[in-house]
Length: 422
Image (cartoon, rainbow, N blue to C red):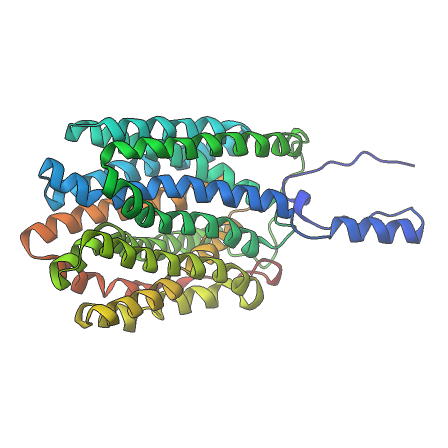
């Protein structure tokens, strides 16, 4: 007769086939189960990502104000980036590993409170050390947010993992692109204290994430009990380890390049072309908006054509344009930055989903490693680039960074995944 059904995290996103029922009822059940992603949840988690990264991007966007107000050099600017990204780097894998074992549906809203207090502290900071602490608090909020929200996006994907990851990334990318605009319109005219106004965004995010936690809670009550069996065509553990190292290197190259533009592009435009701070922030917004569009397109393309192909094209495809950027004029730099943003950012979703499929049922830890370690290494690289800029010039830094996409050649070491996990 009726048998008990065990529901796992993975099966929550797979079509369910029911036997021993009338054909019409069975057909209706399958159609309902395979209806596709939970769009409301995906929209909510993507919008929360938008709010989260909007607040985080304010840090880099107010660098010119902090530099002028407190007479900071480029190395100190790089240390602020390091304080934010390295905090997230250290904690995200730990958070992901813990939530793999014991999911915390309301941890997202609690973590967002750290960002809330970090913004308030940054708005009132008058010492360099306090600025670093404020940046670290915002990084802590990122550490809690990303691993569990990436898991929620996968659970709500309806099996379209690349699409769901792209929707999730889209919110974050557009949030990052909004930082320079908001800084130009609000922070530059009204000063450092106006950063406190953005704490209201953090409060809105806390409310939304609390509601998403209520949806998430019943999804994890039926904890999986079945042992996961590897696909017979899946790569062995040694190849998985090599592939994960390659994926980290690829995401590092992409993130370091994007981080170099996010942290120093404003100074590059001001120093080379003599544009105003507000105009430079508009140009930075254009680049980051192109990143957002590219991040969204990459996931569905990976679902359709295979993630390895997208990774190859998105990393190496940007190389000719990054090599040309240091030698272009102002208009050419704007055009090239759009092309680079569209191409290079399309790899993020494919890299993360590829890594998740290499290590099934460890989505939180893998998401934490890739959002944390790879992005944190990018932050460390940004600090090194700041030191290099102090000893040489911003233009020389961009000439060096132009070769970063060549690391995409490492994609040759990625294994071929089974057809069901492309």
